[in-house]
Every structure is written in C-alpha cells, then in structure tokens.
Image 1 (cartoon, rainbow, N blue to C red):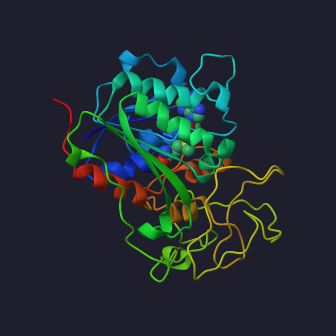
Image 2: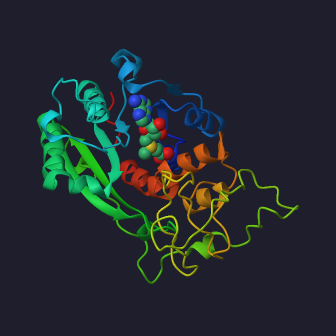
Length: 307
Ligand SMILES: C[S@@+](CC[C@H](N)C(=O)[O-])C[C@H]1O[C@@H](n2cnc3c(N)ncnc32)[C@H](O)[C@@H]1O
C-alpha cells in the first residue's frame, strides 16, 4: 500500500511498515535531527516542516495515513474548533489531512493516557469526529511485549477504515504472538552487545547518559529485571538535567542509545543523528519497528484502494 506518514520521527513505525512490504511515499516531521535520521536510514521523502505549514496539495494521494499526534494537554472544548487554543493543534492537523485526503485507512498511535483524558470524553470525541468524516473507527490498547518486542510498552492504536470499502476490507488489529510465558527478556535482546568502553566495540550510537542512577523506584530510575522485558523506553527527560534512560539489565549503568534502540527493535545498523539527548528522544518516541511490522502485516491482507 502507499503510505503517507505524519509525525514520522526517526521512522520506527515507517520502517516496520516498509518491512511488511508497503511503500512510504511521503513523510513529515518538524524536528531536524529526526528528519536527518530518517533520511539517512529510510529515504529522503521526509519533509522537515511544521505540519500546519503544509498545504494539502503537497501531500500525495495514498491508501493509508499513519501518525501519532502528541496529545498532552488536550482540551475537550476546542477539539476541532478554530480557536486560539493551541492544545489540540496536532490533532486538528491529523484530522485536516484525513478529512481532505480521505485515504482508505488511517492508523494513529498514542499513549494509553489518551483513553482517560477528560474521563474518556476525548477518545469518544475522536471516534465521533472520524466517524462523521466517513470512517469506521476502533481503538485498542496493546502491550508491545505481546508482539515479541523486549519491552513492556502500552500504546493505543486508533484505526479507521473508510466506510465505503467492502465489509471484508475493514482493518483488523493484529493478534498477539507472545504471552507472559514467552515474552522476550531485555537480557536476551542485548545478548552479545559489548560494553561501550570495550575498545573492540564498533557499534554506532553506543553512548550513554552518566546522570546518576538513584534507584528510587520510579520511571527511569528503577532497576531493570534482566529476566523480563525492559520497562518502557521513554522520550522525555526527568526534569533534573538527565534524560530518562532505562538502566542496563546489569544495573551498573544506563542503557546506551544503541541498546535502547535495540529494545525498540531498530536494526543494529540503524544510525541516529544528533546530540545524545536528541538520539535518546528519537528512540523513545518511536513505535517499536517490530510492532509496526505486525500492523503492516494486517494492512497487507487488504487491497490497495487507489485506482
Ligand atoms: C511520538 S513521535 C512519532 C514517532 C514515530 N511514529 C516513530 O515511530 O518513530 C511524534 C513526532 O511528532 C513530531 N512533531 C511534533 N510537533 C510537530 C509539528 N508541529 N509538525 C510536524 N511534526 C511534529 C515530533 O518531532 C515527533 O518526532
């Protein structure tokens, strides 16, 4: 299928879709480092610009639009209304493009918190907005560990199928391939990876934050259980000058950017561009490539809707 990717970041989701056999024909992000990473590893079809500055004519026709619109600070009152309120800006952009391009399908990734915003009214409104725009909309929470990703990462996928498509062409969510008993542990995922100080290590991006680990048992500081999937790889800092990098399963230091990327199932040759903080952020922002592949496989079972 021909895919247009919004809020593409470094391209975790896009790479998974490409691995499933799809063609990403156009992508967008406004973060310079993410765009450089994307160009280096995926292709130069990414446009580095604020999405609100993109004219609809610039976006090619496609079968699928994908993208996770950041949703912090959503305000129910102004969901699609044209007000000065900036908080729903990116949702409005996502909606603008779907509503005008009318792709056969759309997939939007988001954090689980979106389901509880305004006591669940936000997600209800999102379903209504896209239903009114002509889509059958469904959403589901996934744990990426259930799909072979060595990481507990809970994310919501909102999926839309254009209502005029035949019933047997409705997008179906992927079924888990793993369960608690077969989850891939973080130590399995990092087996054989040399220490960053090892002079024989030739790995790119194998650098880590030295910000002191305090083990206060909250996100970013808790110990990593080597026998379990990694805790969620995060994109944000901790507000105290340190990036929120998860500990290595040996619990002697933070994971390097490379190790975090492996836990996010990026190929070992995928190279990130930018400062250490920027690289950690790009990795933490991504949809795990392997989960993208599973979503892509479900799209592969449907036919292109473009004539
Ligand atoms: C959660 S990340 C997406 C990660 C991506 N799906 C992946 O798998 O790697 C959200 C992205 O939205 C981008 N973004 C935020 N505001 C934007 C804007 N106004 N225009 C374009 N992109 C924007 C950020 O730079 C960030 O890379």
